[in-house]
Length: 165
Image (cartoon, rainbow, N blue to C red; front, side):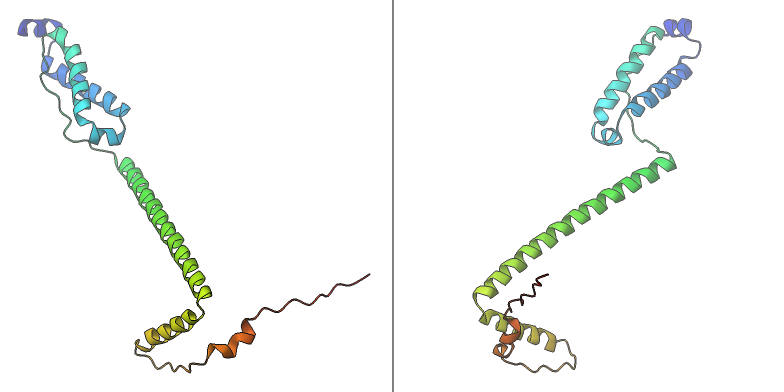
């Protein structure tokens, strides 16, 4: 078999190396970066098949090809880092929006409950005073009955100020 290699190509080791590099660039250039990580076995098989087919006339049998490491140019690394950062920010915003939505739903439910049970508002107020008073501050509270403020809460009908021209 070595006889064929010498006749077909002068330096079969160098020629095989050059062919492998060219094929590697070609196949990796057609692949997505995610595929390089997740489909490495498929890419290795594809590389071996292509290189073996092209070196067979030289009498060279390629038994194994394996992509071990892929070095990316700095600008590609920066672009990928920006993309990953943007994806993390997007996920954080979605999670934050879901949290805001759930909080708004819970506040709506709490408002409905307080609306159905007016004493619940007084209890909530007292709980808030308790929470604030444990913060080691000098705030003084003067609790007043909520009934004193009922006049402020009642809705007044707007006066009809229609002008006849």
